[in-house]
Amino acid sequence: MHYNSVWFHIFLSLSDANVKFLLELSSEFQISRVKERCEQFLKNQECSLANLVVAEKYNLYSLYKCCMDFAKTKTLEELDSSAECKKLSPQTLLKIYHAKIQMLRDYSKELTQKDRQTIKDCENLRMEKENMKRSLQGIYGLWETPSKRCYRHIADSAFNYSCPDCNEKIYFEVRKLCGEGQHLRRYFPKQPDKKS
Image (cartoon, rainbow, N blue to C red; front, side):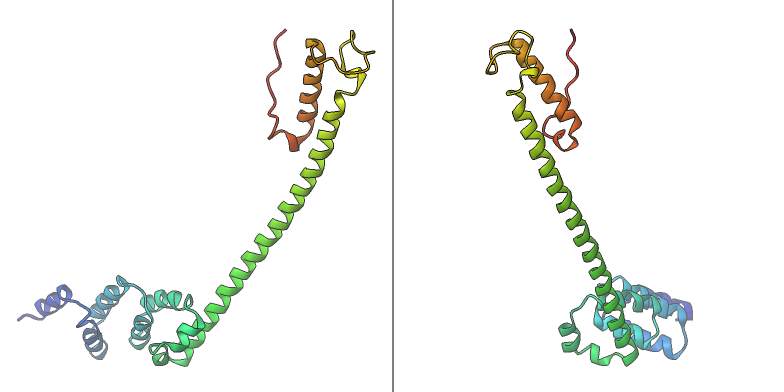
């Protein structure tokens, strides 16, 4: 069988059963094309600690990087109890722990930023609550303010709820307060002015 035909057959028949054997051969005889094909085959599988061991052993840099990203997501208990981790070099284990520490630092930084934003949001809500309370107190006092009634009832002791003009003035004043209070606009959206 021709040399090229042999390797073409190998390319078509890569499997879990023979990939490590072919990696061994390609490394021993320096056949980079077969080695690259084996690496691509392993990259198409799910990342695992077992594949990290293979990537380290045969210097498969692309597979090594993918599996390192996977390894840093494992818990310390999972790493310590893994039989595959015991096959890794101290240098690779150190890289895993460093990557894991950096991942935890990034996560801690993200949580800190979220915590600061939450504190800021709570303070804004507290201020909004106080502003709303003052505005609602101001709105409540409108009915007790004689100057907010129509000219016919300005001297009355109590608000005349049956008077359309008095109600119109109160409506205008309430809308005015709501328009000035940003914190109230979500509850009392501004309405278009009525046509005369």
